[in-house]
Amino acid sequence: MLEAMSKPVQPTMTTAYFLQCVISFGAALTSVAIGVYHLPVDGWVRAFLTVAVLYAVTSSFGLAKCVRDRQEVENMSSRIDQARLDRLLSEHDPYKTEAA
Image (cartoon, rainbow, N blue to C red; front, side, top):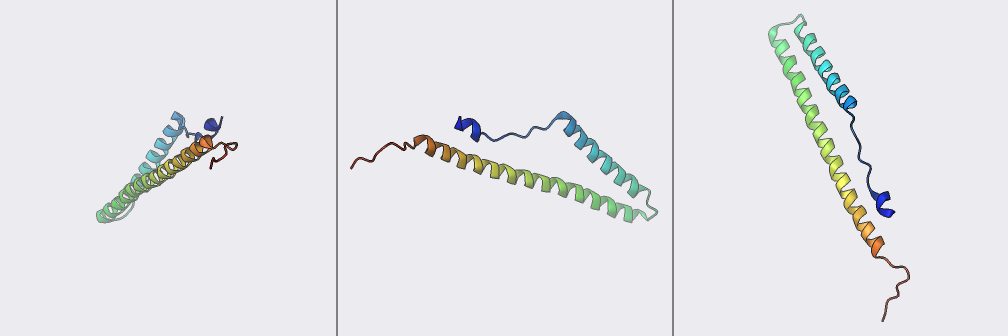
C-alpha cells in the first residue's frame, strides 16, 4: 500500500497537445519571418533581425532543455530519498526491543 502511494505520477503528453505546440511554434516563427521580410528596411537590417530571431529561438530551446534537466534531477533525488524512506519504514519494527 505504501509503495503505491509513493510512486510519482508521470505526466502524459497527448498527441493533440504535442501537435498544438508544434503548430504554434511554426506559426510564430513563420509570422516573424514574414514580418521581417516585409519590413521597409535595408537588407543588412533584415539579416540582423533574422540572426537575432534565430538566436532567440535556439536560446529558448537551450533554456527549455536546462529546465527539463533540472526537473529530472530533482525528480531523481526525490525518488532516491523516497526509496530510502520506504526502506527505513519497512525495516523498522516498533515492537522490537534491543537486547543488551
